Length: 314
Image (cartoon, rainbow, N blue to C red):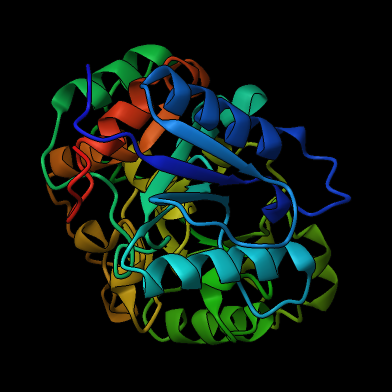
């Protein structure tokens, strides 16, 4: 497929921490670049801390309040693109990774101009059902009915200090959430720490005799026993919906969660969950997840390029 105009796509390798041992982050960027080239567009690799003129900037992750040269260049790239009326593609974690924990990064998630549904675009204005169908086949996943016989309430923690919770303290949020739940239920509560922030356990002070820490390595083991899942706004909500367990989102801005439209928000309803249809949810997940082969052969970039808003480069 030819385009009326070649696009310049800047891939910010310097947006990865200099001492990072996670080779997957660099591979995601270089795979993306290979696909851009395969589609006929121009790639500019940025490995210093200066922004460049481009149509699309590609970064790994987003920005938060922490310091670091890699975060600064991400922020500088975002600001330049916004100021010039151009776009940013952000590469984020796989919301489907729990389906194959030993191959967690089989897919990664891609968004345009932001990482929340309130700020970003997930290439889902026009749904292509073939995307989700392909992912189901790749994972061998069958859509599950709603589970209505779980006994426990699963609370999934997020990274303390991560960008998705802003300034909210994870220990404070947990204690407040447990207190609210206890007004409406006496079910056993299981607290599942974020796998990338296990040290948070040392900071937790849980004063509830029917609240325990999860001992399960695989979140599916917790979900198999869950009546409901409580999150602030993060990815375990996606796992829960896929597994058929109702989800509550407590973020004051619940629209920041990708499960918002299918989630409960009022903890007073913990014993009376709703069971909405999830077909649209499945399809929207399919629009923003791509695997390595789809990146390198250009399938992912062509898909995104065709759905870029406000561009004359189609």
